Image (cartoon, rainbow, N blue to C red; front, top):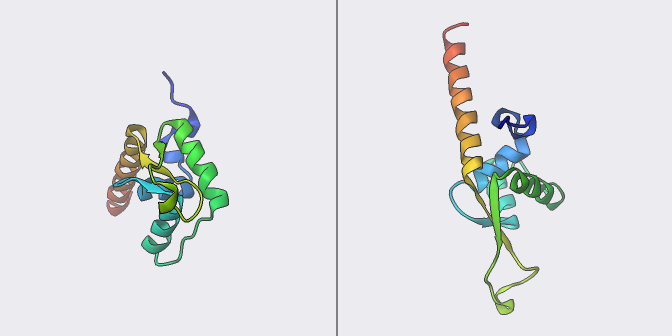
Length: 113
C-alpha cells in the first residue's frame, strides 16, 4: 500500500517530532508532554494545549501514538481526567527513519558532496 505523503516520516512537522520524542520512552499525559518539551529545550521550545491536542489527535490518526484514559480516582485528580499517550510502532519507525536520514545527510555533508 502506498504511503500517504502526510505519513512520510521526513514530513513530520517540528511539533509532531517534539511530541513523538516526548512520548518515545514512556507514557505521558498532556501537561507532562508540555513540560518535557520545555525542559528538554531549556525553555526555548514551548507548546500550548491549543496546538498539543490537535497534534496528538493527528498522530493518533496516523497510528504514530496510542492513548488511554487514566485510572486515577477523582480524589487523585486536581483537574480534568488525564489521557495518557505513548509512541506506537509506526511512530517509532517514523523517528528511526528520520534519524537514519539525518545521519546519512551528515555523512554526505562531511564528504563535501
